[in-house]
Amino acid sequence: MIHDVTSDLASFKSLRFRPGLNVLLAEKSAGANDRQSRNGAGKTSFVELIHFLFGGNAKTDSIFRSDVLVDAAFEIRFDLGGHVVTAARSGSKPSRVLLQGETSHWPIPPAIDDDTGDLLLSNENWKTNLGALLFDLSVDPEARFAPTFRSLFSYFARRQGSGGFSKPTQQSGQQQGWDQQVAVSYLLGLDAGIAQEFQETRAQEKAMAELRKAAKQGNLGRFYGNAADFRTRLAVAQTNARRLQEQVAAFNVVPEYTGMEREATEITRAISALNNDNLIDRELIDQLKTSLEDETPPEVSNVERLYAEARVVLPGIVSRRFEDVARFHEAIIRNRRAHLTAEIEAAEARIVGRDRQRADLDHRRAQLMGILRSGGALEHYNRLQEEVGRAEANVEALRQQLDIAERIESTKVQLEIERGRLRQALQNDIHERDSVVREAILLFEELSNALYERAGSLTIDATPNGPSFEVTIDSQRSKGINSMQIFCFDLMLATLATRRGLGPGFLIHDSHLFDGVDERQVAKALQLGADQAEAEGLQYVVTMNSDAMPEDGFREGFDIRSFVNSTVLTDEVETGGLFGIHFD
Image (cartoon, rainbow, N blue to C red; front, side):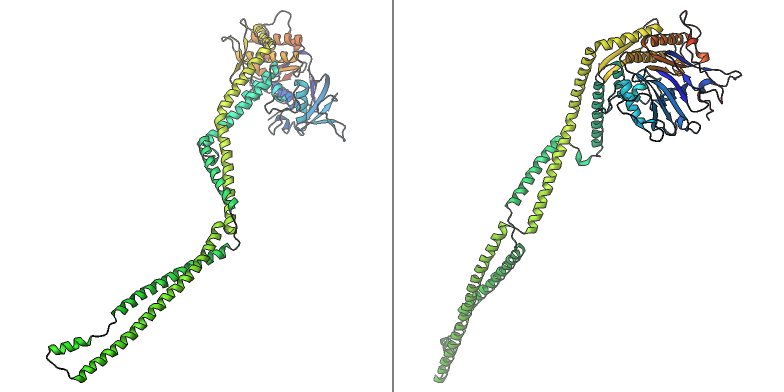
């Protein structure tokens, strides 16, 4: 429970609390006009101060970092871990908390300031200690969706500014559904780990959904595709890589590969030139043989016969001359034939010589080509190895892509199976903790029945999306029914937590909770809160405007005024509020 709240700010109105019901009242000051409101008296600021002292964020827009309050230190004395301790915090140094009291049993012991002798903790370690000591939370939780001190604590001090009065299971407008499931499960005594696993599953589903969305939009490029396509491409790539690897394994590096390749090329050109020269000589031989056949001496008898037919009788001397001419021509023909025959023989000899030379060159070329075919140049070998590296990298990339594609395609089925398993585990947990569930259901029914003729109900169900907590009070004609659902729900949680030795030992309700609620229902709620707090050893703190505090509806002998805090706030602008300072 809270014992007192003080400050070194001179104008601050110190607050002292007692067990059971405590009503922090805001009165209308004497002479105040109708336009003055008690909404600035500090009732809501009191709730904000409690959160500040219990590790709440102190961002730059926090009232505790405003010019008028930044240098002030605020202090709370309350029960923690079986001892009364004092904690102080200021807006000027919001990251640290000053402590007094027994701290030897704390999970994270405070340090001692060498200059002042004060016990000091960082605000983060302060929250960790509070979680361990008030809610039995792990100092170093393994699961990332584990319950946190700040989330659990906010059910015991809802804030209007954070949207804490919208629905029973939601202590803040920013609180996500999974956090509600985890926190409420934990406070009720169910296995909160199942709710955490549900959120892990939802996180995976969200990631897969985003991945599929990105794939459809083409943002993943080659990293996403059909598993069957990747499987086919992988098989082809593996075959290609093996073929290249075999080529590298059988490759013989020829040191003088380039020179041999150049020599083989030159030999090929030389053989081609020899072939061309042989062709020319063969054509020459054919021509010479034709000329040789055409070389014949003239026939003298033909001349004589010509003269005879002309009846010309040649003298003997002329005949002798013809014989001399014939012998002369025969000599010329003999010489011409001898020359042509020599030319033919020379051409044939050249062909034979070229054939021998070509055979030698062809033999050398065969040797070179054999060597070249059996191996290759070092450059070629290096390029081949580079190709093998690229092929192997492609195989590995395709293997990874296939793995990703298969996991994506199987995720939906796996997550559906996981959801089914978790739902079964949740159903088993609810069944095994039947006494815990029945206690919560019956307590909510009892509390709501104290306010309305027809009792409300708390329904706890195992759904495919995790644990479901539905709160209903069947009284549609009553105003502020949602507020009373929250009232009963909070009082139930605070009672159950107190019975299990958990929680801060107090429940705080801002006056906003009772806005729009019938006066008689407010009276019943205050009376019920007082009774429940006394019966369970719980402290119940309520802030109210004096004109909103009921006069009727209480049972005989119940005096609400006896529960009003001795410190009364007013609507006086300059000094009437909790801090006694005017805020712009």
